[in-house]
Image (cartoon, rainbow, N blue to C red; front, side, top):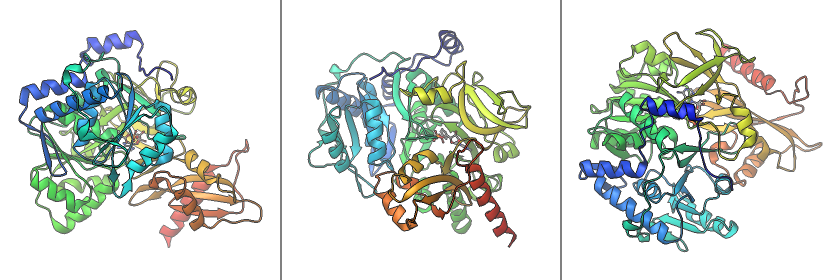
Length: 541
Ligand code: OOB
């Protein structure tokens, strides 16, 4: 198992320290400091529980010590798959306190993704919610434990036969290790996955806490802020932009939304006096429609952040009139770079751009296919490096060679245009990836599943523009000679592959042949063009 590290060249690291970005802060020290400064203030509210900073810190320390008492050792990886529940914070800060490294999985992930993340990270433990939205995560975890010798510990919030209960895992905090090296890896975030299964993104204490401090400032957070987590807590947007961790950094209160529907969230915003929340564009659209209908009384809400996928100006302009708050567009990636519109930017910047970088030391290059810089205002590939953008994925030599350029530049796969002011406008993606309501789907991964069907000779997955989801997926299927699997049968087959449900193609089309490019590769471009022509023909009707 390769060591888990994230290393910037020493001259860059020295600059990031000298400029005050990396301050040697660590997650265990951060929570202790907040608990000491305002222990009685509410840190996390959700599922009918209210936890103060002192309770969160004490609970996390006892839990972390309990994990070590069970035989985990600092540096071990532990996969965390939980919904938006307070125990998520006890678990993750407990892992930090014990020097253990969380690996974040999303609730939508199923056996295929979880087994991959466990194997790649070499995880020795899993901390899960026994059930999330009706799915039995405990049964899945226990069956994986039988199969994977490295996976020794399954701990559940709630209860499930055969697994340790989180509440019973407690030890003496005196047994916790010294604080980690601020440049060491704090956790493994996962990539949106543009090719194949999710990749592991090692983030350090120093680099991530820098983004929390600056994101909190840019989004106007302070000790009175109340952040509603409506999106999954394990996603990088919800966690750090400024998200739940940025809120804890600022000494505010995290309010957990079990679902992101407008009815439930408007009520929570009212009851919990929420000041800021974050959505992906399709959810923002449902909130806007609901608000147009019901005119909710939510005067405490100051900021609505929208990100994860492109939010169109048309919708963006409706935010203030309908929700009575400032829109903040957020264009970020788990690999690092995050852009924000600033709260005091002119209205047209807020509605028409995806913001500008957090840091004066975020370096941005917009280049053409040959790698040459394009002038401002022209679309090109976004390359970036900076004080919180990784220099490589964990144990992915192939992906690292593709995604990182000499000099350490990360090739984001996004096509953007930079304005003279430094604001970026996202124009699309270069790669074969579908951004379905902010969930990133790798075309290649889905094609792999489809061609596993005995009647499928070849499969190509492309995105189709969708008014609600932004993009949806369409699979073109070439059947084996003499066979034509039915779309319903292929859907059933895909469900049986134990993958996240959002990856099952929205549309499946049988074709008699697939166009190929000059080098004999199947032409996704020609398929996309077919779909586009169809959409335009429909519009004209
Ligand atoms: C966020 O992170 P990921 O890692 O799930 O996905 C990153 C990709 C970007 O490369 C881009 O393709 C797309 O998601 N994206 C946007 C966008 N925000 C993200 N595309 C257009 N407009 C936007 N506002 O999605 C993420 C991480 C941190 C903060 C916010 C989002």
